[in-house]
Length: 213
Length: 183
Image 1 (tube, each protein chain N blue to C red):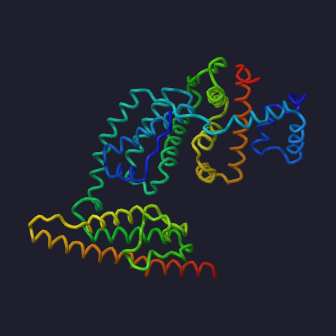
Image 2 (image 1 turned 180 degrees about the vertical axis):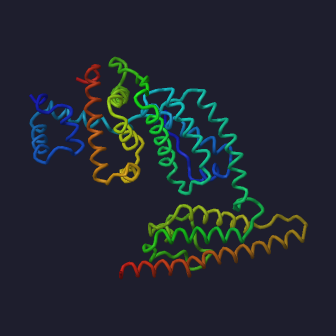
Image 3 (image 1 turned 45 degrees about the horizontal axis):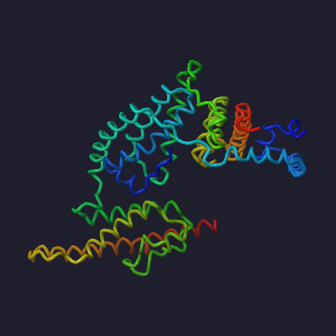
């Protein structure tokens, strides 16, 4: 008897919230009184449970074609990226690191606007830990993954720089490493100081202005 | 076949031209893109062409992708646009040659029968309905994103998606019942 009144389409409509409230309530009552209807309803519910459909195995020739295209594309991308600062390469340009961090920070805070009031990248520049899940930046919900990735890269570089230099016997090389380390620390602090003292106050001011208007 | 994922750092390396990372990325998405194209177009040849065109665009523009966390949505949107363009160009001449595997009530467990039934049900929908179902319910694209790409309000797209899902549920149940997979 429930079959005729509640067909599959009606059960499906109910599950998608498409039935008017009254009809939905009637169906629920009917299902409570009719085990067969309840079973059909449960079955309809299972129809779209995850995973709904899996990926399809592509033809072998398509995969072969894609591999050859990837090879060409990798060359092009590597060439295109040659003008960008390679933050992980040995030839580090600190000016470029700072410029990149500044640019990303500006983008981030321009984007998030008013929700940056509690952001504090740390009391001192070097104490900011981009890998920490308790970072203020993350907890405000305003963190930008691009900025975080950059911060991680900078931190990783910093850790590399802070490793004791291997004794090489080359005094000139050792001095260069120490100088390099100092210069790098200075630049990192400048980047984080800029974010804290310049970008954040501007974002907070903007948020306050928006609230007042 | 399980769905592979790519980390953001993997995408970053691929963008920098690291061949291994780029290959990982491309091959991880190949079954998804091909599956989406096949289920949308219902034709293997068209799906293959659409997949090639999609990856040409992906590889050409990957370097410019800024939001690496949204790689999935970005690639799937490209694939959908490519398929839609192809379908529009071919119009009614579009062949529908793809036949999903039939339900075998004696061998298939509920999950296998259900997947086949849904695939069969998709063939009875319009292109737009298939697109909404595949992008939202199968690929997990958010309603907000769909509203934007379809130039509809959120309530309008929500309603469309739910109506489509209801249709798929009902049709899939019919297929399962007809095959004897459920009583």
